[in-house]
Amino acid sequence: MIKGGMGDEDKKGALLTAEELPRFDEMLDFLTNAEVQLLYEHLEERELAPDEVLFEQGGEGQTLYIIKSGRIRIVIENEDGTRNILTHLSTGHIIGEIAFLMGTTHSATAEADGPASLYLLHRNHFDSIVLEDPTLAFKIIQAINKVLCYRLSRVNRELSQILHGNADKK
Figure 1 (tube, rainbow, N blue to C red):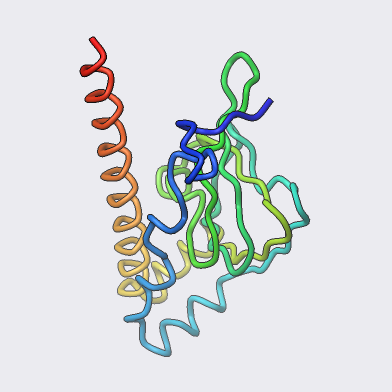
Figure 2: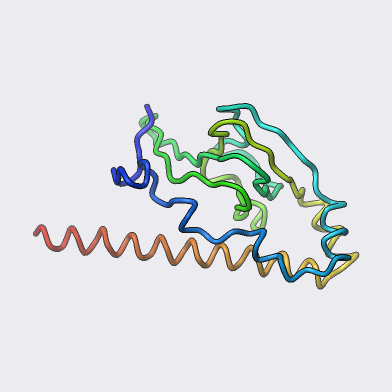
C-alpha cells in the first residue's frame, strides 16, 4: 500500500516536490571544461524501466546518482509495510547522497516513475577524483552539501508547519 506524504493534492502526495529542490547539475555550472571532462570520465550511465528499483531502503550506498532524464520516486517503507512517497525527483537532481558521503545504508527506496536515465558516480571513482583533482572533489562535495542543506532547511520548515498546526488544534 502506498500512501502520499502529507495529503497535499497539489504536491501529488509527496512531502517535497522536485520544483522546490535545487538542481545539482546547476550547482556544477562553475566547473571548468577540464573538470567537466574528468568528472564525465568517472561517470557510468544507467537506464531504468518504469517502476524499476534503483536501490532499496536499507541497502548499501556506495554510489551517487544524478538524474539525466525522467523521474525517480523516493519511498519509505514503514514497519507495518505501508509505503509513503516522500518526493519525486527529476532531471538534474541527485539521489543517494547521504549514504554516498557517510558510507551508510539507504534511508529510503528509489524507483523509476516511468523510463529514466541516470549518471552514477561510484565511491571508488570519486576517491580517484580526490587523488587526481582535489579541487574538483571539493566542488562536488560543496554542491552535494548545498543540496543537503537546502533539503534539511525545507524539512525543518515543514516540521515547523506541522507542529504549529497541531499546536493550534489544542
